[in-house]
Length: 458
Image (cartoon, rainbow, N blue to C red; front, side, top):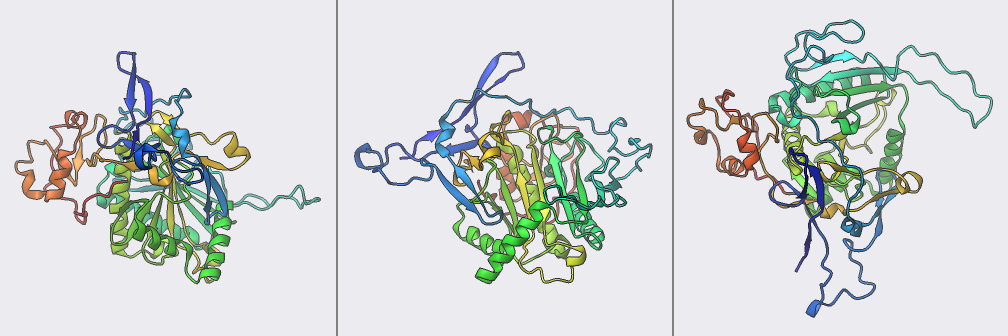
């Protein structure tokens, strides 16, 4: 028999008193299943030397970065008495003209945003890279080297409303974001060798503005991570005659040990070499080098799988889940004419949360001075029973597949829903049910293109 250990955390209730909560109770919570202390006949412990990955520390190789991560799953037993984070605010106003990302708001440079109704792109008012930066002086010693750094930095707003995040948006709205990503990748990649699309979501990840947005930085050089992944993927193709991440995706799809969610074109896994507790890797099933090479159907299915993944994240700890994410693909600019077949398009998701909505992982000490270390094995990152509502908790309405659940205008919602969606409604927690807004109008049909297959559990 397996013993189940549930980490606990303490946070203040509304009345100010302390409340213990389990991070592995009920639907949508993390469940860390450890190997049994008594796994032999008659309750005997495993024989000395019998390796149990969930009990014994070991190192795992990351072929994409050519480094190792220390896995020490038994450390999850230790009590937490460290820093407790403040959960993200739930009262974000939909439109606040003091917010420089809102439609009609004035930004720091005096420009006024248009009354945009979909995505909106503008040049970053405080860019880390500028196109006209002068060349540094020649280096007189190899220990004091400098090189040119030029480029452009743009901001992409996903939606005009500040109180939305990607999992709360419709498939059509997410598809518009994907199309804009591809457009910017092609536009900036025509001249710059690297275009980095990334999103920092949540104050915990350093995001200073709650408005849904990402950043796009294009540079005249390959950043460190890009150069590293270029080398490792090139070497793998030379040695095994197949792109690394294409082979990896096929193996993970077969084994399903770390599979989070999948559809016909994409799959999401907790990588075998993951460093962050709930880190995931988004991979296409076919060989694709760059984002702009996606077909229309692949863009639609990407919108669907992103929505499903991010809804799972939000439901883990019933909070708007913080993360940093970004796309990696083959270099552009002068590399467009080269053979980049060793590359495979992919997206990294790096969430910081560890045990609860208020306990995060820190990269300090050993991680900074020696090598990366994680407590849970990637296989232990498991959600026993997800609350499958598409909207997380808060003062916003809960939306399932484009149907507002308790709107009086939805006279016969069941006729529009298949059996799986009805099952999803039944999984809503009492908290989420109590937060439904009856005054919210009901769309007349389901979001098109939504998958009707059951969600995979973590």
